[in-house]
Length: 562
Image (cartoon, rainbow, N blue to C red; front, side, top):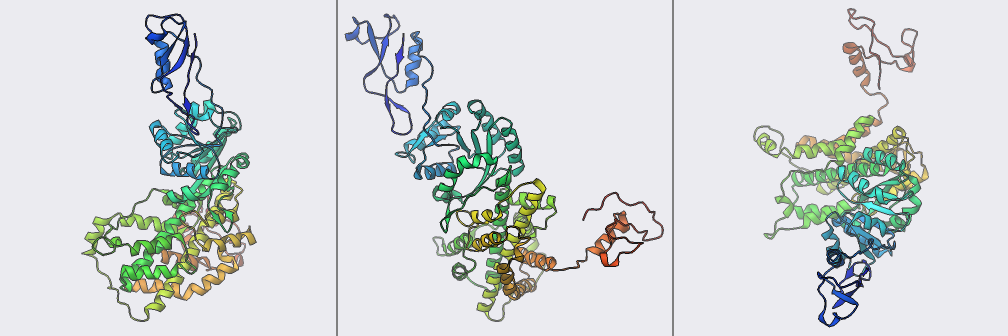
């Protein structure tokens, strides 16, 4: 006995639509439990009415004791598979489909798959799947599977559910905001199973995902030739170049995305501080501040964040007042900026601006406490005297210089991470990836790309001729803004730490000599002598302890870490 399923197939998604009337042909002896069409009773065969789905037909057939055989075999047709149909996932699928790739979509809640196929994906080369097995069976080899799900355990759970249906050489891509140590672990784990893992940063928000994000892939480099065509096709373009290239080993892609997000925190904090000093220091209205940002967006500060800040400041509520002035001053955060600051501390790198940006959000969260403090703690009242236009020009230069410091610190961290984790990082391409599609995109990043292309081993961005000149040009205005803010009592933590870092970085002799003497005094932590003062008593390159009081001993701490 054999049941032959029939139906009309949708043009792209592979689902079977019910055919009209009697559609299933059955060959079997008459059975008392089968309802027959009366006109066919004498015949040696009968037809069953096709219900709303093949699943229902199979259930009826099984009740009749009919063998329906193995599940239908899917001929692989999809170039790329994506799991996770939130807005980012749907938009990336549509982006890939627009570039000629057939994409298979899956979501844990399979009803989302059907809704997507019947609406946004309709008429496009997008197919759906209702199980992991079906999903994998529809993908061409090597299977290229991207996960856009919540970071953490859900990524590991999906990986485990995929593994039984994958073969050696297949590729799993995590496009979520995963922490880079997890990507390190997954790369090694899947490599042992013959599966290539890629941890890819994806930046640009919903619009970027739909029309061109910044993509930062890293992991098992064997995967890159197989995903390069898709990734560079769907990525944003800057001066004709895709804002996507291979970043480096293991978790390097997610690491670079983490630093990108940290720099994003810094950029946003700097902009907010500029807004605050224009508002409270110069007494400008939201519309007037918007005009300032509009002008800045035509010069060295031309960027996505400056552009949207202008738009926000121009946006009025129904009563005609700027909506931004009604928004509660209590900033949220998802943690990626904090990850950057913590990693900088772990590696001993002075990424001060991102750290201040994170702490500024923490301070903003203390709204009730700050409200009480405002009525108790005193300070100066800002009062501007002088040329407002000249001060605004100084502020533009101060913002530009502080941004340069933030990016210099970010690349210092990336370079140090490469050494610490033994990654081969593509520094010129990292700057290129950030030039378009992502939240921190700006014309400024073209100059960073050129700096690292001219000298891939550049020790610090501040040593590049272009940025050295820019910092020197900005310096007077930068110092004027920071000093004025202190006198006015307007906090500029990001501007101030940027200038302090610059002054510390250019200082040959810092007061850490006294600090090290203090450490040796109370804890016998030792110190080292300057080469020009080396002697037989104080040899160069040796850890030295001194009995500062005459009462201590000669035993010193076992380690000296500088």
